[in-house]
Image (cartoon, rainbow, N blue to C red; front, side, top):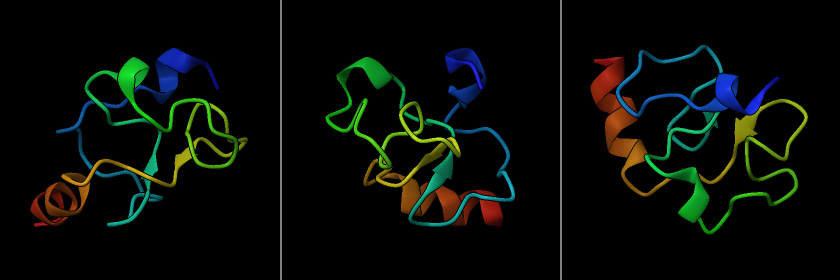
Length: 68
């Protein structure tokens, strides 16, 4: 997947692989300043499956809001 495909807006509808502790793709507003950017098997851009395993602290609340 390309970097462009992995940049997902924070308010975008949930993906089937999203949970309250991980996201498919990167939902950071500015991934360049994310402390986990580029970390193997943690960052969506550096993992083979495109999963971010350490989303922002705000993600859990946003996940439940989007799940409705």
